[in-house]
Every structure is written in C-alpha cells, then in structure tokens.
Image (cartoon, rainbow, N blue to C red; front, side, top):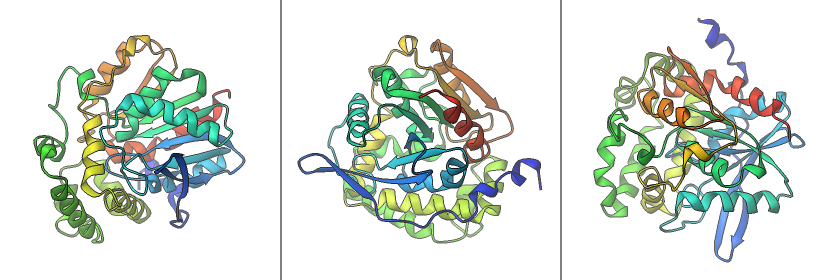
Length: 312
C-alpha cells in the first residue's frame, strides 16, 4: 500500500445519511442542506460535483472536524431535494449564497468546490469576494466558454451527453435512474467495471479499495439524480457548464487555490492551467500521478488546511 493510501483514515465510518434542512429563500423555492464537521467551527460552503448532491460532503466530515471547520453542503437548485429553478444562470449563484449566509448569520464563509462545483466557487469569487474567507477547488470544472480547447479532452461520457441535452427531460430521468440502480453493484462488477476502465489508474485504486468512498459517491449520485426534479434538474445544472458565465478571470482578486490531477480523465488539466494563468491571485497545484477522484481524496487534507488557515 502506498503512503498516499495510508493517509485516508479520515474516510472511515462517514456519518449516516440524514434528512436535509430546508431554507425557503423565496415562496415555493427551497434549498436543501446538511452540516458536517465541527458545528462550532469556521463556516465553509461545500459545492458538490455533477451529477451529485449535498451528501458528497460526508467524505469530508472527520477531516473538517479535526481542523475546526463547519461544512455546510447544499443541493444546487433542481438537484437532490432542492427546488428546481428553470433557466437559472451561474451568475445567480453568488446572490443566493450571500443570502444563505445571512440567513445562517454567517458574516464570511470559505468555499470548498469539488469537480462540477468549480464554476460556482469561481462565480462567488468574482461577484462577492467580500463575503469569502478563502476558496479551495479540487479537480474543478471550468466553464467551457472560458477554455481554449472547447469540449476536447472531456470524459467521453460527458461529450456524448452534450448533444443529447436538448432531448426531453424524461429521457434523462429514466437514464439516470437506471444508472443509479447499477450503482448498487460493487465497482468490480459489470457495467461499473467498464466505467472504471475509462478512469486513471489511481482513480480505479480508490474505487476498488475504498469501500467507504464508493458507498458515499454512489449514494450522493443517486440522491442527486433521483430527486423530485428528475431529468430537468440534471439538464439545467449541466447547461451551466456550456453557457457564457459572464466572468472575466483577469478581474478576480480573491485568491483561489486549485488542485488538479495530471492524469484526470474527466476534466483535462489544460482547462485549469488556462484559467489559473488568467487569474492574478490564483494558485495552482498539479499532482501528475493522480486522476479526477483520487486527486479529490488525496488532496482533501491540503484543501481543508488552506481554508482553516485563511483569516475570517
């Protein structure tokens, strides 16, 4: 077993799945959220991947508690248990998070974004830097209009789904619910084993030998795609990555620390290289041997250390 794999004790015995809290931010629209880590700790808003849910943050519970961080993880609108907002835009997110912080009586908060949560952390850094204490992004997605390579280099499943996004929402509802059923299988069983073959070697190691990781990731995925909004919520969230974010990276002065795997098969490292190069206060750490999932796990400690050290 590698030294890297010996450092993952924080993943053992994640907290049980709990029913969410709800915040009705406007009549008829609710945001679902759960808390992890230290209840009295420094607040950190957690932005989950795509497609996933607030339950993904269960993996950070023990590490956050150790570092004195209060993780507040919410389902994005239309995902999991949060209400669907049709035609929502990325630029809507900072205002929602600022109001959510006010609702929780939080003056400033850190941001921890994973994979598809990356653009949401970026939008807050651009629009409400005064509300942020620090930002860490692990294996983060970049809005396609901000990249030079377009869709090239994305995982084949992502590229395949882009032209299908205009299909009727029930198609996605049925598709993702079928996939959620296969997630009940162990990762070494077909068809999950086929998916694992498309990932980096270190990602496969994580999935095959980290039972807690597989369980949390698949439960979070199922929660995210089998919510009341069904396929419509999944499509709406996906469309964010393909739409002009109305952000100028050159103008972002809030410091964001990015970590990315050099062997990431889901989101090409060139995406984050290009974005970070345009941001005057960004810091980028590339770990050549790690992939998409393994990077998020093996650099979680560093990401949370960064947030713990940032001044409130």
